Image (tube, rainbow, N blue to C red; front, side, top):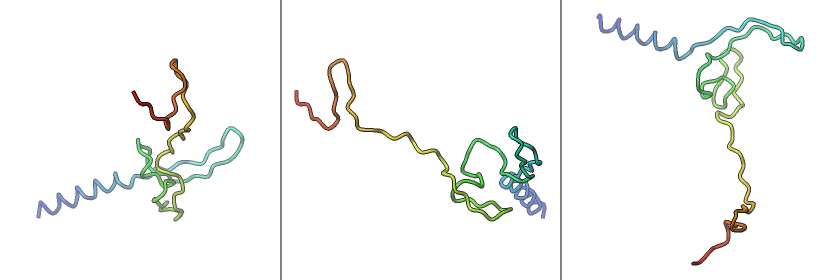
Length: 96
């Protein structure tokens, strides 16, 4: 019986951290726009559990997330690189 109570308490304790919501009071921005009070996900070091991230749903509004979990890497162009020995072209093969 004690084991069952302990397991139940541990599950409830862990669940409070998994679904931590933060209430944000209404406020005015510097440009005069009013932001209504709302809930948001608890701030942490990851973007994977934010309600606005793709794959997640805001439990209060039912809206699906649209933002990517990670920003896209900068695009690489295939322009030749100039070095002190001349221009290096990745598509050109050099034989020695």
